[in-house]
Image 1 (cartoon, helix red, strand yellow):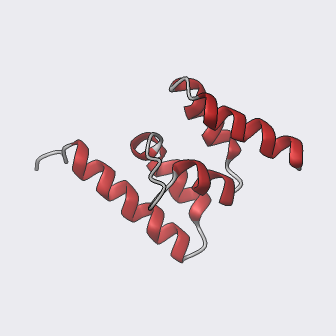
Image 2 (cartoon, one colour):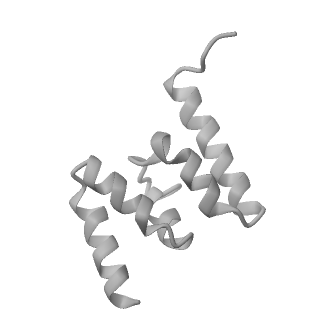
Length: 84
């Protein structure tokens, strides 16, 4: 019973997020998938930042922005919170 490799883990995480969106459970899906998708920002496809904002999971976005020294994601967190 082999452990999935990194590309497979990302694919599985993406499927979990997609399913979460479809059934209205995006917040929970992001929590599970975040470790594998937190650096994924594709302007033509999936954006971890956009998914976190849509799911109101700024806590997850902030956590991974800090871990990855991601200034743009951190700015998104701060600006989104200020707008609320």
